[in-house]
Image (cartoon, rainbow, N blue to C red; front, side, top):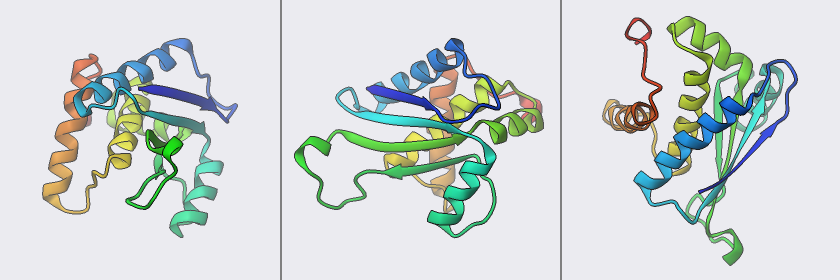
Length: 155
């Protein structure tokens, strides 16, 4: 999968290590879901920006951790768009807060949010307990495969 990472915030550093781990996590997800010929973007933002997006597109005036915008939600797309999955916005500030809250690394949280966002682009959701269980299982499979496991204290 072709992954584009764009840093649109200046509050937290985006290291090469973070970018490499994002690519590794999404590469594993790509292999599991047969997405070798696809592409997507990860846009790293701050709480203010994700709150603005959340307010504008979801009518929720609060910061959130991740928002996904699928390019193709079942409608017609141009031929050149067929392999573009969409965009995933991640608030690095919220990721840092959640990493502390859950007792695991910032790296793990950002990568988890990217995987979570990708699964939304693929149509997975967590509206029912059954859907949530299926999505969590897929997330953890990917995270374990790259060695960024959940801290038991943070479950």
